[in-house]
Length: 182
Image (cartoon, rainbow, N blue to C red; front, side, top):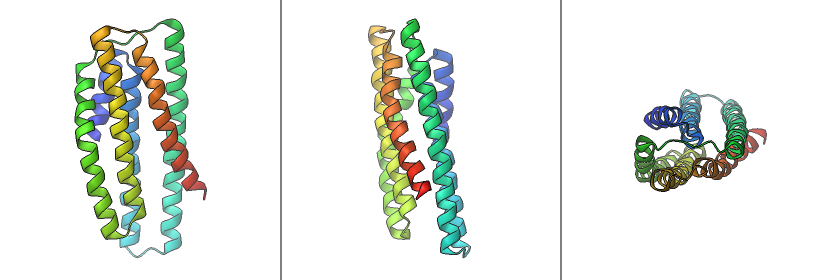
């Protein structure tokens, strides 16, 4: 995910692609989410009470959900602006490559996290694994948008597919935010 973040963000900035920037930033948020999951599992392993563990999990869900929702607003604003101003992104072959890699690797990571989560009786780890499936869908969106830009030079493809990406980011954000508020 760190590689996905670095390549996605760098490629997006270089190509002027809000689609790749959003993909990279979402990958960074997945790193934060995974880190909070490790923090929560360590608390449990160190004998923290179930109330402390639940508070830690809710706090991390609320933070990650809030940041994802803010990212959704940002991507929507930039995408709409780009559509109105006819701003086009350049082709990014590194962005296309990272999308292909994510489509292949994320389902494998999901299966591993789900089996480990079930073995550890950790719903949080199982749910975190499901976020990786969402990442694969997002990578598919990035791939299609990137290929349309590369093959047909459609100026609007980056912004339109970024708006499709907002659906996944906002859905993840709302789910995480609501988990934190329970």
